Length: 200
Image (cartoon, rainbow, N blue to C red):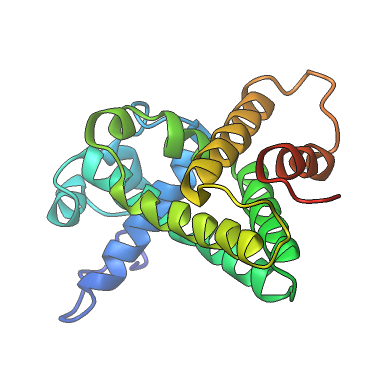
């Protein structure tokens, strides 16, 4: 910005930097709002000190910005799970670490988690990039079965059951925080025992 508080025009090659600033601001605001319909592209523009027309150069409408923001969040979730699993050696411990890391990310970013799963954009457009997390979890479940850490079954079906339980539990914790919730890790361990068949 210059001394008047106005943003200097981007020089050639810096457009990607502005797009990144806009996207980062959108992610932050979605986390605060907890839903996509309240997001305003004008408010995002004000947050990064640019004209609203500058935002439209990169995101033609609010849905495009929300979709890009949720894809970034999903990538962070996958990365958190991958990093946690990489610190473990046994397949059962890897699966548990992956699920726990993703759940902890959701608890740290409840607004973003709500947008990922409950937003109007999600209902209207879908988010095919979320298949990456499903496949990572399915592969982890399959390794547990292949090594005898879990009983043989259809790994994808078990993964969908586990995903449904974890996502439902996290949504409930976010939307009904006053319930007497048990420790997060204990509840996830029960899911892994009952749905995957891991021994505690």
